Length: 130
Image (cartoon, rainbow, N blue to C red; front, side, top):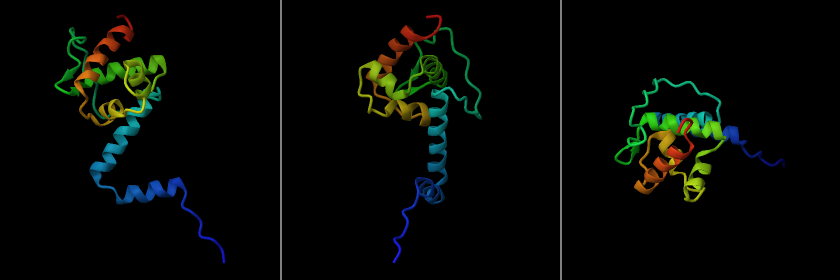
């Protein structure tokens, strides 16, 4: 008797994709797009980037949600410094296993206020021309 072959990771992904809802598929595509932009591969975006306001250092979030212009600023610094979201979290003094920044960049999820405050300081230090 021959053993049944285990499905490859690609086969597992394809099966999960067909079982996913349209919202789950969009969330996955957003996540992959953010990771791609963070690594500097320049993903194609459907939404134009918002212009950075004059007082952008003071306005990085609306409540617990990052502004689209802030996401672009963070990704620009990440590309320039070849960092991943987990690397940024480590620089901010949080666990590199904390995926909250990745979710905030990819799926526009909420962040803790302490992370937003640390991001404001981090952007001030590392943004080009700052």
